[in-house]
Length: 276
Image (cartoon, rainbow, N blue to C red):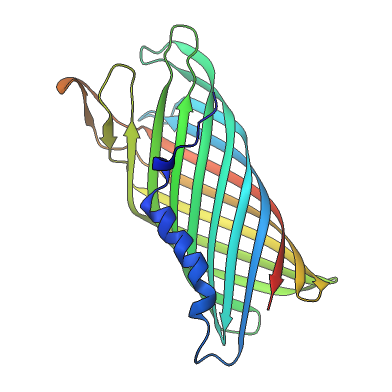
């Protein structure tokens, strides 16, 4: 069940991040003698895993699949400071293995669309080391397809993370190897739930922690052009959310919450860029 694009699905944060991507080269002009600006476009293939668990840690839902898409980034180096803005959009599906609200096992598919943007600033603290911080924004549309007697429904998740991290780089062959690690926690999060025959409900999600490991290799192609490959391992743990009242035409008919959810993403990207 593909998720159709809609203009209204573009969040304000995604628009803001797009403006910041365009503004980064301008921000690196005056008062910076030692400066370099680069842009990069890459194809991404993300191996995605999703699991929902009950209060005893037993799996209620398990999803696995691949989300392909594109990624665009702009980087600015100004002296010892390094600034980066990045936007990506992934679309795909995952196999759904779960159960209905009455506990009956069911298999289906979930259609996914993910918008992810981040702003990152790092400082060179040694020849090979950088320390920094990152602000990340995620919007995830998830639409579970109907299966048997169970009706599917759409969800939209929004969350923002603040992370700190370190990066190390060294020469390797004809290019440069980069290793990085990031750890963060949420600033805000919510989920919009649209159950069949019910009013839309905004649900508050639980606490969130995220850890990411990254390895990248870059080699020059000549005349400012370069080729870069990256692989990341990102683990996100979301605690059980608060109870929300489910209504039909404004009348309460039930209570629901988002169970504890774990997400593992392994995006692999190959991109080409230009530095000037």
